[in-house]
Amino acid sequence: MPTYIALLRGINVGGHKIIKMQDLKAMFESLGCGNVRTYIQSGNVVFESGEPSEEGLVPIIEKRIRETFGFEVPVILRTAEELESAIKASPFQLETEEDYKRLYVSFLDQAPSAGSLEKLIPYGDGADKLQVVGKELYILYEVSVSQSPLFKVSLDKLLGVQLTARNWNTVNKLAALCRKA
Image 1 (cartoon, rainbow, N blue to C red):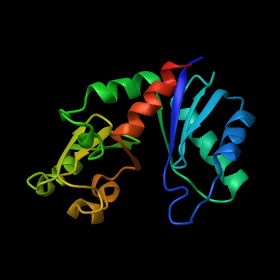
Image 2 (image 1 turned 90 degrees about the vertical axis):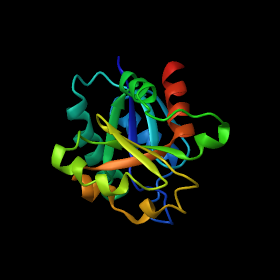
Image 3 (image 1 turned 180 degrees about the horizontal axis):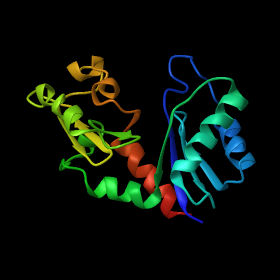
């Protein structure tokens, strides 16, 4: 069975949309998913599924979250292979462990249109570097996310896509979990 990574957006942030990871794991198991593992409280689930279509899995997962927890949560899905490709495709070379804390990947539900990508141009000349590769938006912050002018920019609205961001350490930990299948 293929290994997938479900990235939930906006759970357990600021006391809103609280989901305990043990409950999330049980919910995925109730969908018939196997080898279900979660990583940290931000909604990262590695699992196996016989579902033949990635596109078919997302609405099933989102519906079950709504039924189980009582609120909407956007879900971005990647296969283990897609996650590995996203790691290899990073346009930024990291030299120190500190750099790992400044690189974030936003996983998009679809590749943005050419017109949407043009909307990023004004943000490309700042101290923070950003680049879209396929369905991933990579941002290397000069200092940190919270100190960046990009922190206040709704990149999802700008690009016209759903997205959820993870730091580089989390992305690599999720890939490692997939390899342990």
